[in-house]
Amino acid sequence: MKSILFLIALGIPGLFFAQSEDYKIYDSRTGKEIELSEIVNAFEPVDVLFFGERHDDSTAHYLQDQLYAQLLSRYGQVTLSMEMFETDCQQVVDEYLADFINERNFINESRAWGNYATDYKPLVERAKVNEQMVIAANAPRRYVNMVSRMGPESLNDLPKDSRAHLPPLPISTDDRAYRKVFDDAMGGMAHSGMQNVFAAQCTWDASMAYSIYKHWKKNKKEKILHLNGSFHTDYGLGTVTQLKDLNKKIEIMTISSVPAEDFDDPDWLSYATRGDFIILTRPVEGR
Image (cartoon, rainbow, N blue to C red; front, side):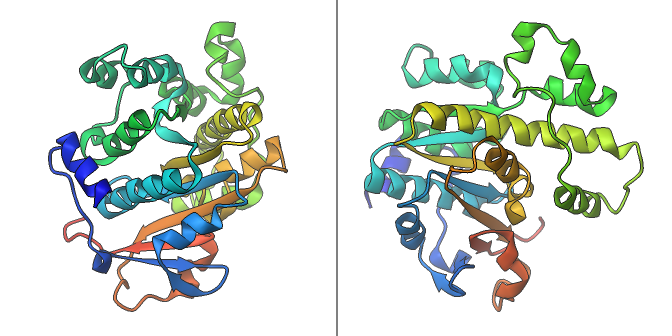
């Protein structure tokens, strides 16, 4: 009840409240359907929890906020890391959390996504109220676009101050399993022109992994909840692999959230390899 009152107090337009019949949670490790609280319990020995989402899935966003609330209640310190903000906006995010700037300036200058108010604001405000850090984890889009157009080597030509917003170079693109999943998602277009596009994808992954790693290295007692599109972390690939390559001692757990056409009678085994926990949401008609 407190979490609902908290969200109502935010005055968020169009805020969506999911019902339990709109989602199902599956533990891939035990093969059983579970409650959200069981993910919270499983986080005890873990450093980083990845929540892979579909960006337009309101039910998943609601569950992210509920999960974050329960994690904070259980563990006290839980840093929120987000694909939705880019590394060169970290100062703006910090200023907003510290109440130096107002929300309007924060949204404009952090280049917040169009669905920020309805989908991500509850989490950022929860972090702010609880005095938690929010990591602007993603690579600046302009640099990812450079890689897509001119290849990953183009990043070496950036000024030092620009490269400071990126992970250490060169960025690895050698993950064959990830490349196969990527090519399949792109319709099997594995021609040479796609190499730069895949390198751009890896730039996102490596940037988020490095942002998480830097915080973990300085704050090893704090837990981290990271939000990203599910493609970045499904099957333990992408950002997960990049983070493991930085330090294999980091304990990682993953959630993959999927709007499911077979929601009423799911074939759980067809989803199980996507993550440690699978969240199926009832599809919204028209999407």
